[in-house]
Every structure is written in structure tokens, then in C-alpha cells.
Image (cartoon, rainbow, N blue to C red; front, side, top):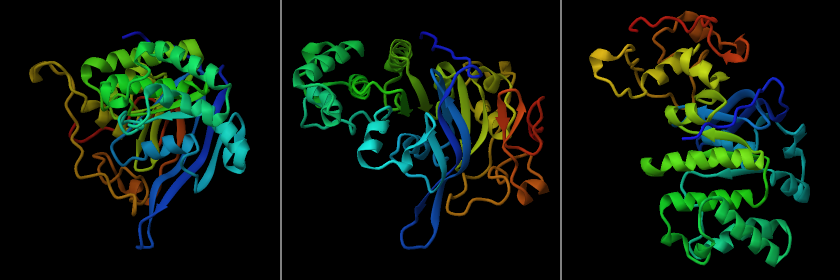
Length: 339
């Protein structure tokens, strides 16, 4: 697979700034609220790929939807090029949102089975009022070629395509509005392993050609480490760690990140492996009633009394490397008793 374009974030301008983001949902008639996101701070820089990983239920998808305006913040702010889109109304909101697109996990559900591929790709530009019918059709056919599909397939329907081809069609749709940022929510999770590499290579090529910025949401550490410039690790609605990809993979500073990395399959006999898997006990707690103090403390082998009494600060432990753990230092996370 080709290497993604790298960006020096210190010299780049943020295209999105997230401050104290909270997103909650009512839990039916119980009177409780689901704390999907509960205080998240970070920036996305122009031209980079920010990877976001974590277990199911950690808030990754809600974060992606909030970044493109599909989920309204309960508290906090998301600034797009310095503008808070939640304060815009009507036409101004729709115009600003064109710059921030999302591609979903299920390529089948994202396409209307009653529309031809050409009509599906043209639709976003038609709704936005970009060009005329002839120019939109020409742009759609060009975009099909750009994502590796023949224009001769334009009159076919979604059921006539494979999963990988459908995802390429969804990518073409998103590109029709020439966005600045694309949020990719588990975009290769539903694809065969044999086609994932090709689709990831396509994303890297499009990033260079269209000057794109990606937020790449996935649970697959091997995918996020390959494609990302920086990686954020989420757990129960909060960030546990954020760092340049190589630094986080090679030198994690948070116990949760270390446990995730230890679970990555290694194609070696057990006797030849240099690291033991760290088994986390129990399930991820309910976002209806998260643990006090550190969210990870109920499963952390290194947790102490302070972890239950006090929430760890989100702090920059070393240059560009952030973590939320009382005991992490620049040398690494706290030692696990069973490691």
C-alpha cells in the first residue's frame, strides 16, 4: 500500500477545533441521558489524516457525526475554520456544511437502490445547486473514473456492484462537493480484506490530488497506524491519548492504549513473541452511568485510589503527545502488575 501524505501539524492551520465537546442523548422514558461524548478537546490540521480508534461504545461514530454537523453538541464548541456552524441557520449552515462530508461504514445502506449510480453521484451537487444538469453529469462521470470505475457503469444500479465498488461510488459522491474534510467512519470495515488495501491507497491518492483532510474512524489498529498522521484513542466518551502515529504505536503513554496495542495479532509463534497480551477484565461500562474519576479505572490493572476520586487532566506529557492518566510520564504508562 502507498504511504499517506504526511503533514507537519506545528506549521499547519487547524481546519477544525473542538473544545469541551459533549453530546448526550435521552435514554427513552427513563429520565437518564447517554453520555456519548463527555468533554473532548483536539484540533484537526489541514492536510492531515487524524485516526480515531477505540472499542464499540466509545463515542467514535457520534464524534464523526458531530464534526460534520449531523449531531448537535450538547455543550462545547466545534469551530470549522474558526466558525461555529451551530450558530448558523438555514442556507448559511447548508453552504458551510458542504466543506465537511462523511462516508459511512455500510456502502449498501448509503446508496438508494432505486437510483442509478450516475444519479446518486449527481444528487449532492444538484441539491447544492452547483452547475447545470450537463456539467453535473460530466463531473460525475469524471469522478467515477477518478475513483477507479468505468463511466460505462454509470447507468447500473447498486445491486450490480460489489461492496468495494459501492464504497468507491460513495467516495465519488462525497467528492462532488469538493469538501475540505472527509470523515471516514469505518469505511473499510465491511469490505473483504483483499480489497481494503486498494481502497486505502485510493484515499491516499485522493488526499494528495484534492488537498483533503481526513478524520479516519476505525477499530482496526493496523489500518489506522498505516493511514494516519496522528491517532486519538477514545474510551467511554473521552480521549485517553492523542499523539503522532508512530510515537503512539511505538511508545504509548496511556494504559488503555497499551492494552489495545497488545491485542493486535502478531504472526509469530507464542514462544517468539516479545510482548504479552494485556487482558482487560470486564466490559466497557455503560455511558448512562460512567465510573467516577478516570473512566478507564474499572478495567485498568494499574488503577489506584486516586483514579476513583479524581478525573485525570488532559495534559501534554511530551511535545505533541497528550494523555489523560494520573501516573503516565514521558517514559511510558504506569506498570501493570500482570505485564
